[in-house]
Image 1: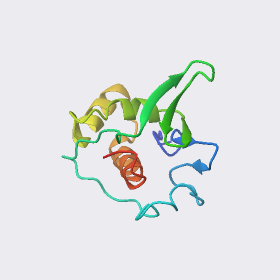
Image 2: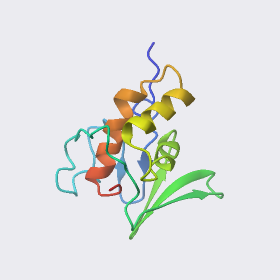
Image 3: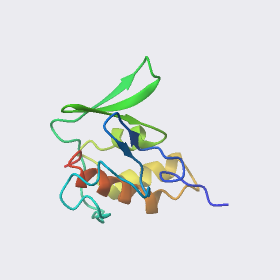
Amino acid sequence: MRETFVNGHAPVAEGPVGAYRPGAAEDPVGAEGPGAAEDEPVRPDWRPVLARSVVLRHDRVRGGDLLLLPERVVVLRGAAASILALCDGERDVAGIVAELERRHPGAPVGAEVPVFLGRLRAQRWLR
């Protein structure tokens, strides 16, 4: 059985405005942004960083991580926060994937993380 890293564990986000899960049939958040309905490939040399209006925070009350956006809070699950914590503008996508493969051997990081990052870029949560 293949271990899933992003999609199988639904790690991404669920917020009060709508649910956002990679691979889900319905993606109300994805329907908002231009080009957000499609998975956009990301280049391995892209150095993702959170958009200026987006903040990654740990919520001690919920025991989870959040993305704070203007007029929206997105609850992160699973590996999403650890992926976003690596998006510091210093590491490129290839470096992020390499680091996650080191931390999670056997997980399909190389296939799922670039798609995940592309979806967040389409939402304009990453630049």
